[in-house]
Image 1 (spheres, rainbow, N blue to C red):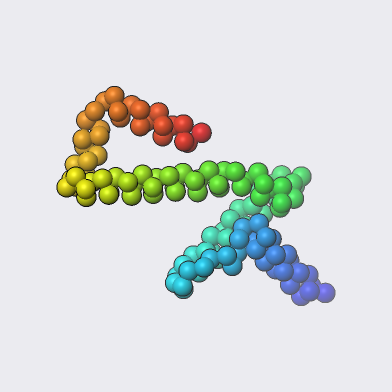
Image 2: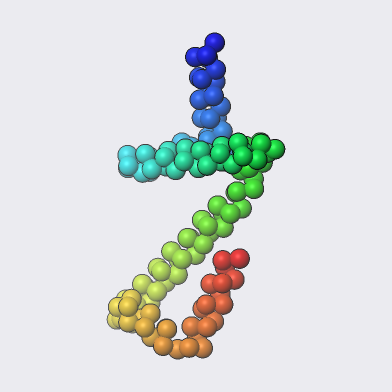
Length: 125
């Protein structure tokens, strides 16, 4: 009976990581990427399981719903930063400037830099 109980816990963990955390959804061909994806899924599941153990009034689905908006905001912020980085790189290449020189030029204009900081603070909220 104990072996079945341990196996059942593993089955539930695999189901919940697939359902809530997207385990197996990585579509890259790199083996290291697949390992990293599985590791992050199980690490996130472990943190959520600890949170559940301490609070005990939420199911894993409720915990995921609570954490999902934070995870999505982080993912969105990373995408925005990657987009900005790409735009700056292309702009620098077009103007014949290095990224460092381009950032120095932007940071040298206090008015524009303050606008950028306001936008960044808004995106963080």
